[in-house]
Amino acid sequence: MWPISKRLELWLVMGVVVAQVVVLVSMIVLDAAPLVFGERIKLQTAPVDPRDLFRGDYVVLEYDFNRFGPGSVQGLSSSYDQDWFYNDVVGRDVYVSLTPMGDYHIASGAAVERPPAGPYLRGRMVSPYRLECGIEAYYVEEGEGRRLENLIRQRRLLAEVAVWRGQAKLVRLIE
View 1: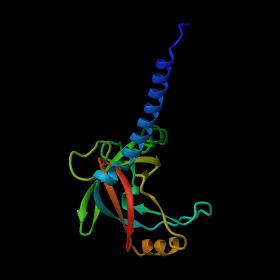
View 2: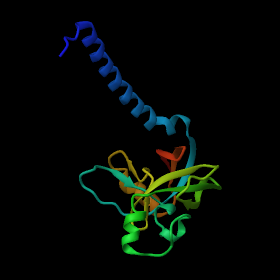
View 3: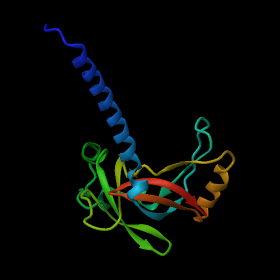
View 4: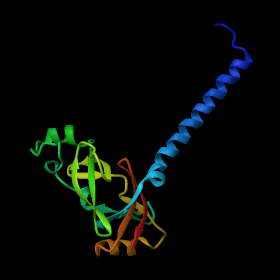
């Protein structure tokens, strides 16, 4: 093996450190992109009853587009076959088109292809008939969880979401 000069060794170590910093910074920037560049929209929440003693006070949020069958997704077969469903549907990305309706947006369709225009969410089928978009949990101050759950059951709570290229970040809850 040829001896490596100290200068070259220093440049290699600095290069590795810089590469690691670039990777970490890019992960943070990509994660925050919807908050910086995204369009702010409101979504109507739906009731669900969460219970978990280990997570502290949090609210599980459900939206009307979280639950649907494969027949309602454009590009997926409507026939139900257990093996096909688990092999082809679970884990698949689904795009939910959003349309304004008064103060908030509603889902106007779901497809396996990204919509050409308008705001949309990219979600993943995590189980039969269940789509998750990464905006289904919101941590709150101690003692606030029960009150917010009651507002959700009364359909009086909106979620403000920043959406950018299908990626969504939950900003806040609005009463």
